[in-house]
Length: 219
Image (cartoon, rainbow, N blue to C red; front, top):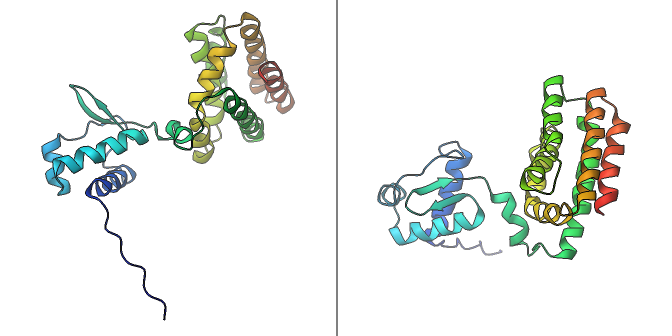
């Protein structure tokens, strides 16, 4: 007869992590919530303050909470953004190339799901974002990033959205590098105009053409 697997004892700090993750999953804590102070929380969880602090540091490293000096600790949603770093995929030149191909696969793949899903008001919002893509400043970079995020969000698929979020840090590094060149900015604007037209006309092929124009310039 095989022996039963022994039950492993977990450090109190890891119990804090598990308890807190469960509280978020069940809705007790939501993104943006400020969590109770240290004394109240340690008493509620039945752990020492030192174990609580260690657990909070782990949660902060995961991007689940954010410790704001002099203000308190808040629930955030940055876990996905930290995953690639945990896996060792730092924003090196080679990894940025790989993540760009992954991003292309995700965006092209999602077109079949979203090409006819944008209504008139949403298309107008996309146009407003395109109007901000005019130079190599943060306004243009943020508008470009927001445009693509809205495409991904339109899939209504939480797993696709999470994978895309994991790439966010490296995507930002790539955009800051590429959009330092004005010709890239101009191509980005032209490709996003084509994408807008595709969504307005619910034209699958035109949207793919817009993405091809976009990626031909940055790959």
